[in-house]
Every structure is written in structure tokens, then in C-alpha cells.
Length: 101
Image (cartoon, rainbow, N blue to C red):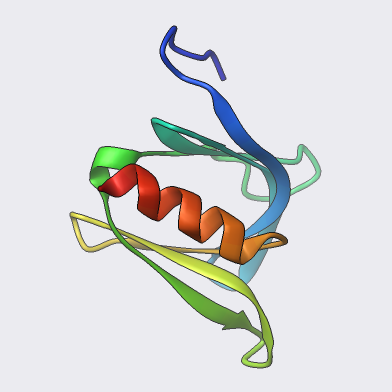
């Protein structure tokens, strides 16, 4: 991931991205401009995900396995939803919301 000159990384954290039945492990970088998820090389699904802050319409809390309060759902303007399981959920959610204003 190459940073733009006006971009800075706020969070660089281990996360899982739910893709179908698979929880893809990797690293999530949250900047003032985008979310960037890079899967670990050992995953079956290795496609990276990049979401511009401008494309995000909503961020909400969720539970993993229906029990554990450690997931975040990021919804985009085109109707897509991405579920991340990560630490610092409340902090990251607040930061993303502050970038959307």
C-alpha cells in the first residue's frame, strides 16, 4: 500500500474479513482517506480490499459468531457490506465516523 502525500495511517491492526463462509485473516490499515485490508498469504482468498472513505455510507457494531462483541460492519454507497472482526472496534468505528463528516 502506497500512501498519498496527504494520507496518514491511524490504525494498522490484525483483522479478519468475512468473505462467504471464510474468515480471511490479515492486516487492516485505516487512514484518513481509506480502509485497506491485505490478507495473509496462507489464506485461500488472497484478494485485497480497498474502500475509500468517500464510498462508506455507514459503520455499525456487530457480533462475531452471534456472541462476541468484536465485529464491525462497513456499508458502502453501492449497498455492499464488509464485516471485520478486530480489536479496538469502538475506537476504529469512532475514527471512521469522524472521517465521514
